[in-house]
Length: 120
Image (cartoon, rainbow, N blue to C red; front, side):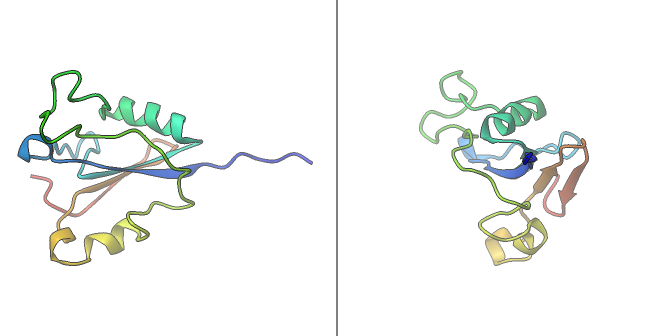
């Protein structure tokens, strides 16, 4: 019996290192970036191709007191795009502090869906 590999979704949560977020709607980089990939290593490689990076403090790009802006994946992913167990659409309509979060989902086929938020 042949098993087919299926993709998963991996969520990256941006730390506001230095007191600000790096937001770029054209590149699909928001406070949350969700990447569809085959595994966590593939997700990290795809995330880096988008513009995320994982050694910001070490490389002098991020504030050493705040920490790295992005962290590499450590979980097994989810069957659908999720942020803390909620879909991006539902998450952005959550409590006051999350209403205007910028969220971008990057699909394997190259499609990028950006959810409403403060993209300015």
